[in-house]
Image (cartoon, rainbow, N blue to C red; front, side):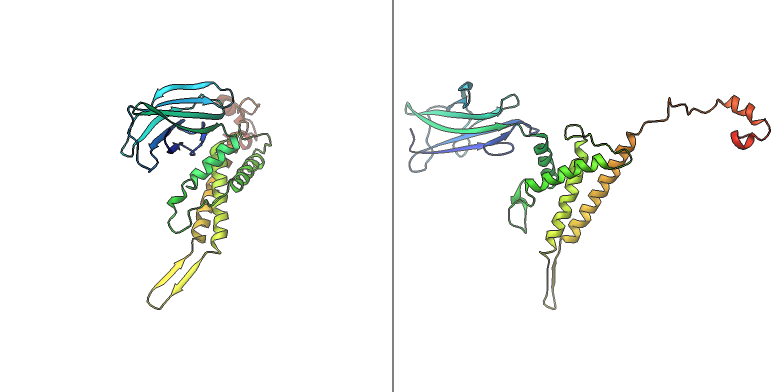
Length: 273
């Protein structure tokens, strides 16, 4: 067995916590065999991979051959976990060096999030708050906690239920239109960020150059526009739920009958000529 090993598990949503509700349920297991000095070992052939359920001890994947190596000596196997049960899975990658087995072992979790968690993920995606390394002027940390987003998601569901013209308190996360909830939480998160940005404004002038860092108004404007968009689409949706007039005894008289009645005295004002 190698003295030093390196294991990399790259998931679509997270490194070791694999979300099976992602748009892509595939993720890659990458392993690299190193010696005690940190140099890449040359294997006799590509390693094999075995994956076992930690809960049931059932072998989920048996001795499949990994592809590679790439330029860094890593071997890869791509999994599709769309039909995998929730739980922890252990994997063992085995390669031979001069006929001697070298084993790398690790584990990963598969989970199916609740509907609320899925919506929180959609909001974070809409806010571009998933990859913090993309922030340029700020520390690479999340801007909104999941608890904050979940609170706005729940507020969005309440707003959809109580808003006119058809108030209805029976919608749940499973039955309410998800895009409207996402839109509401997106708008409120932007507005909350604008409040914090008021404490981060900075203005400097040395007579020849001026510097003004103030993103509060920009975020507030985006939030208000997003909230107006929510109001527009949500109200239109609520109006579409109103019962129509067909079949409720409100049909007008046929044209011929209206014309005949219109000739009667004082009836033109009621039925028209």
